[in-house]
Image (cartoon, rainbow, N blue to C red; front, top):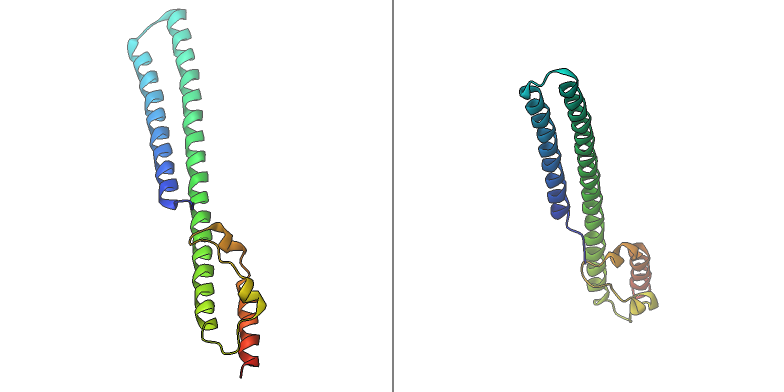
Length: 143
């Protein structure tokens, strides 16, 4: 199973929207409290408490933004890895196709090679250069 950068970015957008909603709620609560117009110690205490809660809400919103930023960076890394994985898979496919045209048999490394399933992260560990060198050496000896 491979990761889906689009799904990761979707989660990031949802987190950003939630952060925006949380900020708006903090602003709304402060505005409602001020609009209530309470005077005296009780009013001041209420406004102080609401300001503190609004600040906590804004900190939570900032954490949502931080998490969304992290998800965006993760999506970019996943995209890079998927590109590497597909490039390795494509190159090995080309090498194996070329190997099928060789006269005189395949090198041991190529004979023993078991490709990972398509899209599998195991492609990131395939030593494509070693396969290419083995095939080059084999094609040079077949000449």
